[in-house]
Length: 333
Image (cartoon, rainbow, N blue to C red):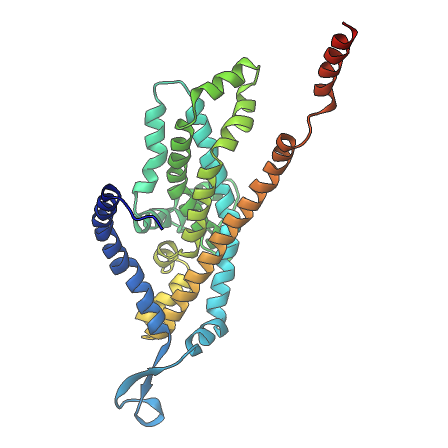
């Protein structure tokens, strides 16, 4: 094994010095809380008083009992099903809107592009709690101009009913995060060499063909990134239902997994069960995120397989005919 040179050792020490602060903060602010949550999820509170009331309390080992209790809770599991349905509808709609806005702004040549880009991104700067309060005023009957306008045309709508409140929340999330995803996609579009667009236009491609066959394939990594972020954010849905809960009786304490864990910890004082639910929520987020990445990777490999086969295989018959003719002519000579 070759020993590193003095220069290589000096570079390694410099890299370690620069990485140490990041690794320390990463361990303190990320790994330590995760480890503590896992530890808390394996404990339970035991009371020494009669019938488990009063007396002294102590923490004892519970193993996987808290996880079993969380999975047997119908409100917690129904909250998971609700956010999965939410994500299956809201994420594609938001990504489509963000992609359309990014393509329109990238193709526009007017001087107001910067203004519209800022305007579309501006809702992301509004905190989720404030956005939910603002939309809450637009959802409540009696003070909402939207409800009044719908009633004036004979459409009786209740944005906070049991069947519509989930999609009212989806509207808030879409309004807030479409601009952020649009900005990520625009950054990817700006990194594409302009020569590719010029070559496509010289070949006679229309604006739609350039967007479909050049821009969309090249911003695939950004689309994957925004989708993964959206999956994680969907499972963490909390602020919107928490703010709308006083306005909508259909939103209970277990409407989303995050809301259920919050109420277990700070309302029911069951922090160990809340820790188990938080760990389960993190595991589901990891499984869905890495599952999506693997699915996308397999799709990319399947689409690249024919091109690799053509490069590695024998050339087409048409490409061999000119050589055969040239050989015949040389033979005749």
